[in-house]
Image 1 (spheres, helix red, strand yellow):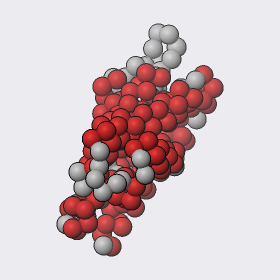
Image 2 (cartoon, rainbow, N blue to C red):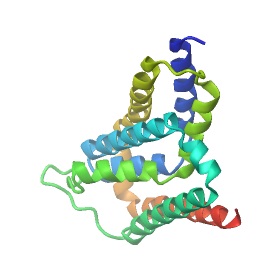
Image 3 (tube, rainbow, N blue to C red):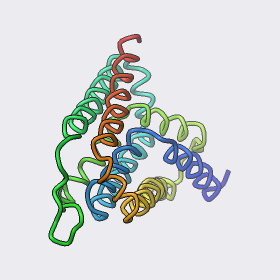
Image 4 (cartoon, rainbow, N blue to C red):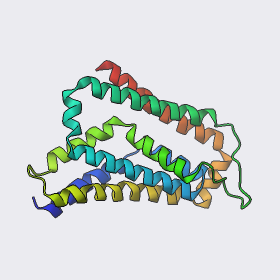
Length: 211
């Protein structure tokens, strides 16, 4: 398999994984409708940066390390699940808090772009299943002798896929209609988003405890 076909095959698999609903989608979607378009895009860039981390880790053999050191994977799952559960709790806790509006009539610019980026990055990195997913794809599709071009191209391609998809989500959900709906049903939407996030986190912890 030549370099172009390898990149295409891995990119297609990563794209399917990115589009699949999960905690990352929940976080970007809520940031886009509850805050500003800029914050939604910043969170999307955080997802892309997390993708670079996972791609680089996969190239360095993280999957092999996690498979050979069971307690490390267990700790990774518990820590990631705890973080997602905490985020879900924070969203649920603030469900009844009114959304502050700026002078222009839109949601306040808080949280900052930096905070939104870090939130996106943290949410992406908190899911160890994503690390295993990346590792499995890379292990099955990469050639035995990896060309230098692939080492450079794959992290870039992964960033473009992850950041690109979540940017589309942020742009669509930060438009007027979704935001107006969010303002009308904020408490319900936040409780659903927080509950989903917390359940995903608890599920990670529970499955880790069963190992």
